[in-house]
Image (cartoon, rainbow, N blue to C red; front, side):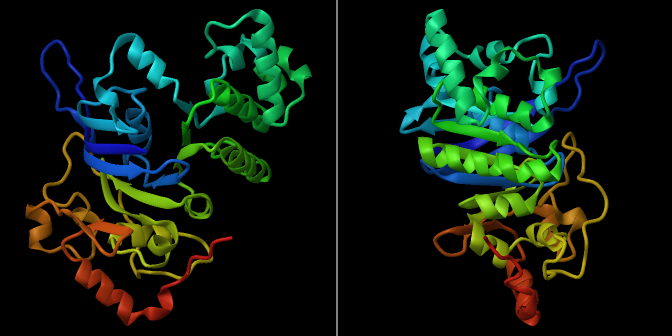
Amino acid sequence: MIEVRHLVKHYTRRSFFVKEKPIRALDDVSFDIANREVFGVVGESGSGKTTLGLTTIRFIEPTQGKIFVDGVDYTSLKGKEFERFRKRFSVVFQNPSHALDPNWSVSRIVSEPLESVTQKEKEQMVFDALNEVGLPKSFAERRPHELSGGQKQRVAIARALINKPQFVVLDEPTSALDVSIQAQILNLLVDLQEKHNLTYMLISHDLNVVGKLSDRVAVMYLGKIVEIGDTIELFRSPLHPYTQALLSSLPGKKQFLEFSLVGDVPSAKDPPSGCRFHTRCPYATEICKREEPKMLAFGDTHSVACHNTHLVKQKAVQHPERIGGFERA
């Protein structure tokens, strides 16, 4: 089990003349992920989704906060102990064309994470990994330019899993692929999770993908989690206006709100005071501009950070036909 507490990631850029304001990519983020869970993370570009995934597994070092893995303080580990522990984690990146070295063979790419194995063992492990992702061993000597987009992503998945990790960050794993290939890769990821008892953090802008694959979902806005809960409950009865707006953008789904998101996400260098969403929110009141909302529980599996949840719920009651627009396969 992963427990993340008050995670912060700020990027500070320095010039010769002035110290710039930090980019506040993550600010005081807390959540848990159970073993064998698929934990979805959604939000617009710039919300901090990828930073959250990579910081959780310390592929990017956090500025502050604690990460506990099965009770072990992962943030305190250093040196060889950290390197050994980090093998529990892996990543499948968004664009396989950028993630694979064009000059390397598939065999070298897939075997890159391996250490302390013989050449014969390495060769067999590569063949086994390719077989698991549906590629014949003849692909081992190919180069990335000889592969289709779907085949490249299968190679990236094979590399991510060759060290038998327990937790995998899937960062937009199908967004760079043709629609016809996306379902094949998603089905492969589901099969591998069930076979190896994997835990996934699934990062995606595609709400349909997250809705169908995830057990729970966190909604991010400008470095904050604004809502988190069981996938079906959250998709059917979202309590944060930002979540409602995201879901209302789904084609063919019943609308939760009459308004659509307008404008861009504000700068992470200078986020709005109070609730960071108040500059785009139709329910915003004076308190939203002054005070940052706390995350409050609504039942056992659903929490939201919003000062005016009562207004959001009231609107939903006034339009009950808008609830239940999400169907899970």
